[in-house]
Image (cartoon, rainbow, N blue to C red; front, top):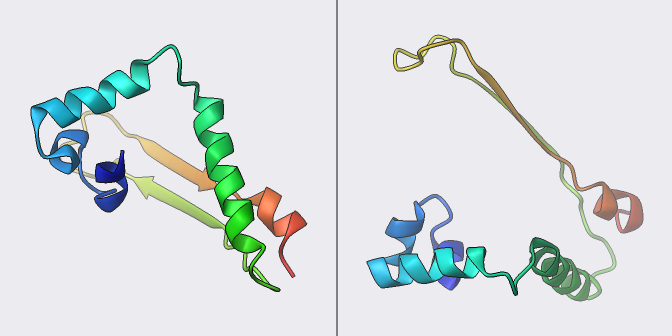
Length: 95
């Protein structure tokens, strides 16, 4: 999975570099033994461990809007709104 973190803008195939690595990535995601909550919890635990090293942690919120309604390749009008809020960190750890 390191291949995806090194190239977050790439497709899975581009980031993986080979069909075998791409297949392994999809097999991992499809595994009945790996649950999304386990992956998120590992990320949360790692983040909490890292921020304990600091007296102050900035919690930055990002809200982005993309409007493709005038794009020539758009068949119908579309508005995609992506909102990422890190309330857990801003309310708990932000100073």
